[in-house]
Length: 111
Image 1: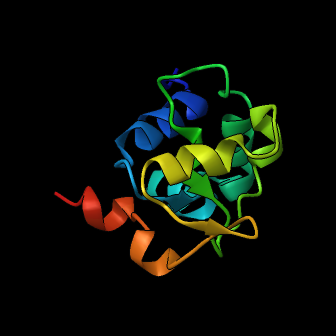
Image 2: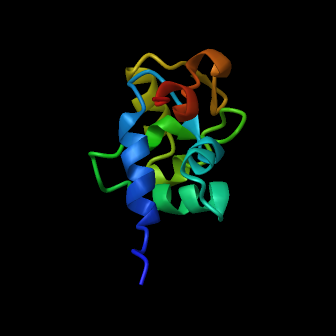
C-alpha cells in the first residue's frame, strides 16, 4: 500500500521556509507541492495553524497580495501588524509592492 501524504505538514514545511519580509500565495504553494485541491487545500492548512507559532501563516496571501486570511488571526489587524514588523508594507489589506515582496518556492528552492 502506498504511503499516504500529510498535505498540511507539507504545506507547513514550505511556509516555514518563507523568509521574513517576504510573502507568497496559496496557489504558489499548491503548485510547488502539486496539490490536486490547489490553493483551497493550502487555505485549509493555513486556517488550521494559527495557534502554531512555528508556522508564519501571515506570510501567505492571495494571488494579488490581499490579506484574505486575516480573520483567522483573532483580531483584524494582527496579520498586517506581523507583516509590517518584518518590513512588509500593507495598505487597505493589500501588500504594497507585491511583486517585489513575492517569494516563489519554484525559483527560491530550485536545486
